[in-house]
Amino acid sequence: MNSEEKHLVPPYGPTGGMLQGLELMQRITPAKVDVNLLRANKVAPGNEYKVVGALRFLGLIDDDGRPTEKRRLLKTRGPSYKLALPEIVRTAYSGLFEQLDLRNTSRDQVHNYFVTREGLGMEMAAKATRFLVGLCQQAEIELGPDLTSEKEGLLAAKAKASPKGRPSRRKAAPEARTRPKRGGLDLSPTLVLAITPETVEMGLDQLTELFRKIKVAMERASSEE
Image (tube, rainbow, N blue to C red; front, side, top):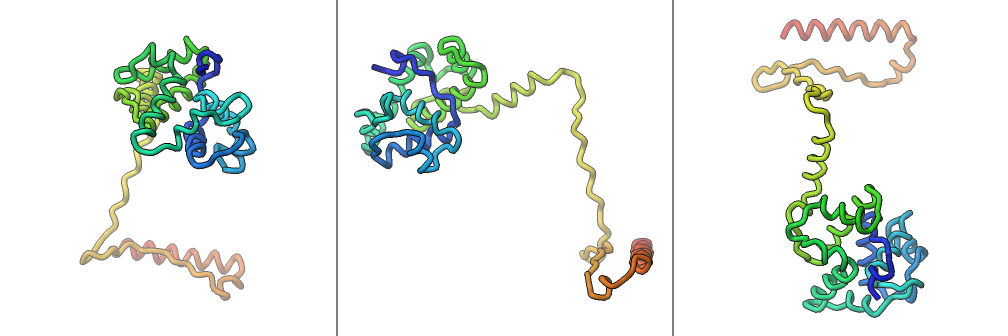
């Protein structure tokens, strides 16, 4: 029985953590996969239950957390592994692959599929889309350019959200002051104040007078240049 028949919700947790869970299934052979196992292996701290859900959605563990026969395919190498992981992904997301050809599908179309067909909210759908893209990239499933350029998509979304004609609030960076040089050497006066036993013992009036003299000396040095 595949994930669609069991009406499992597509994974929408942290992409990195869920991919770590997949890698963990390749490395170890646990009797049961649960939150405690993931916590012991430092996989997706705070989001372990979402990783468990992702592994269940992919058909790698059953409802009780026991690894399935399909999980054994992840331990193969070479051509067997390259065929196994894409098949696991396509089976888990069978409804999506029937509706969309990811080679020429936009990120918005995938997002909208999760919203309209799977009933996810906007934020959940965005995370589900991100994980699907990462999973397909790991499985070497061909994706269209719009799916792999999330950064460009986010920039475009921000541009659309910004009111037109509104001037930017970002202030221009102040120009760096040109320091006078002579013979290729930087001659700008530089203040270096060392904390010595003598300065520590100075009173407030003495320190005020010291800083006044330093200020006058620096002004003179600047005017002479």
